[in-house]
Image (tube, rainbow, N blue to C red; front, side):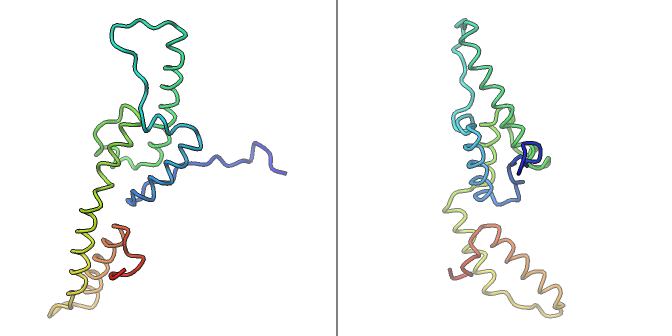
Length: 158
């Protein structure tokens, strides 16, 4: 019988460059923890100049604590070098929006990139004086770029 002490705490998978997959898993995880609202809407802020009662301040303080937990999950999943690149890290929503803007890209742009890579792959030929190893490295570089775009499952035509 499993006990609470040997239960493995689920975590967000580490961001590996495949934003669509990572964001889907991460969103599901955060929804299961009931934290997704913070990512979608951010922390509620009191209007400037309005003095809040202690009872009114309590839910905001609770939301700030939840936001810190979400940020902690995201910090654990995002490499330090990527964290340097994204601009605003003040709140979980800011981190999420920065990641989305940097890594998601529009469907049209991704489609054009995949199409260009497919054409590059189709005309790929071994150059005169090129070793098999060098040719293979160029071929692999193109296929890896296509895979990163997330459209390689069906082949270049699919």
